[in-house]
Length: 119
Image 1 (cartoon, one colour):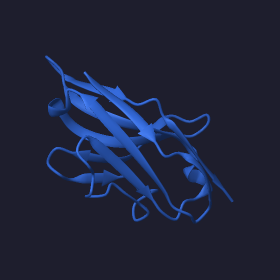
Image 2 (cartoon, helix red, strand yellow):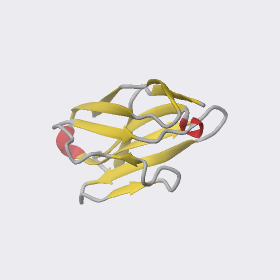
Image 3 (tube, one colour):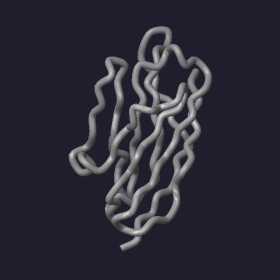
């Protein structure tokens, strides 16, 4: 199993930056992808950024050019650098790990961290 814990949420003014971090523990070697999702009030949880085992990173169109998963990720930690934040970026941000189970790929989620962007 893989356990995830997020840090770094908070209140920020529009246009400002914020950096989220997520620490992974457990079966680290079985992880095939790490990423970030967010859920705005009353909406479904959507992918923000996802980094696969091949090294490629995919970003949602709404955050491309503003959010990045830095290359300086520490071992067992993934970050999300968010710049030029907008009020529509407000939501609960979840760290996600996809890892190899015995027969399939399993999703693990962190507890979520609230990000609020004020206009």
